[in-house]
Amino acid sequence: MATEPDALLQLERRLRSIGDRAMRRGIVLEALESKDPEAGYVLLTGALGRSASDRPDYPTLRQALHELLVEGGVNRLLSYDVRSELYALASAAADEFIMRLLRTPGTAEELKDPTSTLSDSLAEISLGARRSIARGDDHPVLERLLLDADPTVIQHLLVNPRVTEDDVLRITSRRPIAGSTLGLVYASRRFGSRSRVLLSLARNPYCPTDVAIAALARLPMEKLRQIERDATLHQTVRQHAADERVRRSVT
Image (cartoon, rainbow, N blue to C red; front, side):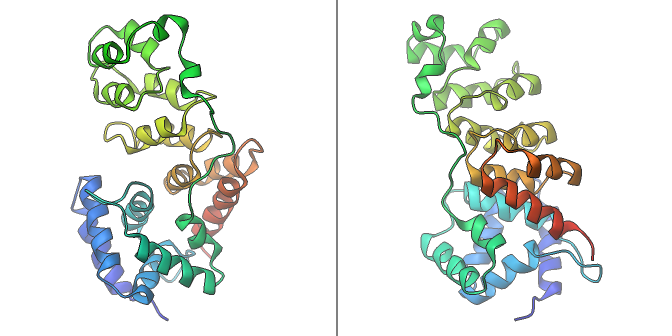
């Protein structure tokens, strides 16, 4: 089944004209769910398949597809039925690259008790108080809250103008850490597209594999090689880094 490059290029150009990441994901979700499974699979393989010197590339579409599979559209996830049908087609084609993107997430490491990362001084503060403090402007106190595992605390920190990229890197480089916390960083409108943050997410063995794999799509080739060789990471992430590097190589 041949991909329609004109249709893909048209979708790529449409997505480039839209700055909002959630809106991009919504457009791609609609494009996938409006097609029959075979046509949806063609869209996936056309946008995410191996590079070749005689075909265009679709970086914005590729990024939106990765994000859609992790975060969903504006208000909802890609439907389970569509995801299952796409996975069945990928399986029938022995397309491990696409299958990997559609699988249930996992991690190389898992934090059993997220509250264990709290310092004694933070543990003494009520959850409601910590959530309120996370919206404040006392940076030394905000730095202490970077260890918090509560999703609302983390969400408040990620939108707090006093919190910097270096602060967020302290979150994404932490081990152990709750995978849900790293997922919130990836979904952040302020920080989720920054190259240093993406690399830190991909290199954290506690990062859910779907989030790490989505981050790989926007890393440069030399960083993919680093991921590929990092024995501390989930084998799925390492293999996807290798496949992503090969896919981008012009043949």
